[in-house]
Amino acid sequence: MNQVRINAGVWRSRVLKFPDADGLRPTPDRVRQTVFNWLGQELTGKTCLDLFAGTGALGFEALSRNASRVTMLELARGPLQALLQNQALLQASKADIRQADALKFLAQNTQRYDVVFCDPPYHKQWLHKLLPLLSGHLSAEGWLYVEAEYALKSDADWQVVKSGKAGQVFYHLLQAASAPAPTAHP
Image (tube, rainbow, N blue to C red):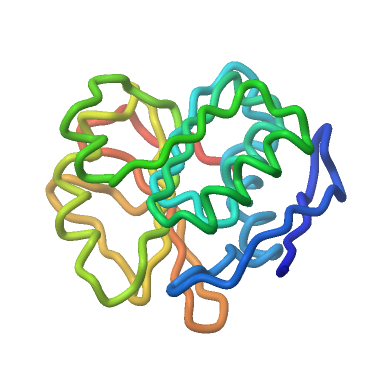
């Protein structure tokens, strides 16, 4: 089993184990630290959606930092079982883990989230399908975190507020173009 460590919060230094799976790339520690710095460290009272939960690193990190609820979607059986085992290990009662396809979930769900994590499999054109749907699932001042194999640019629908690159991973913090002025932390 592979493993990833939670960076901060109530489960700081706890280890999450996960199996090898096609396309599964855990968000590196350094990138997670940066993202949660951007989001302000504490997510107290925030609801989050992790569209491609994989290892659960982003979702469990959000819960460790006091998110009120995190819905984690994972379609693959092996990673899904590991998510459920890690949920039990951490006694993460505020994690709502579902075996679901991201596009079908977004089409059927009307809930709005304060933070959406989107780290889809690379080279499968997921972002072109997801980005048009996601603004309807964010709260008025909600944040969208995206990892991709290429850099994103602001457009008519999305404003790239922060971005970075680690190895082959481009990571971004976005807000809907119609959202109030961004208030990301430095």
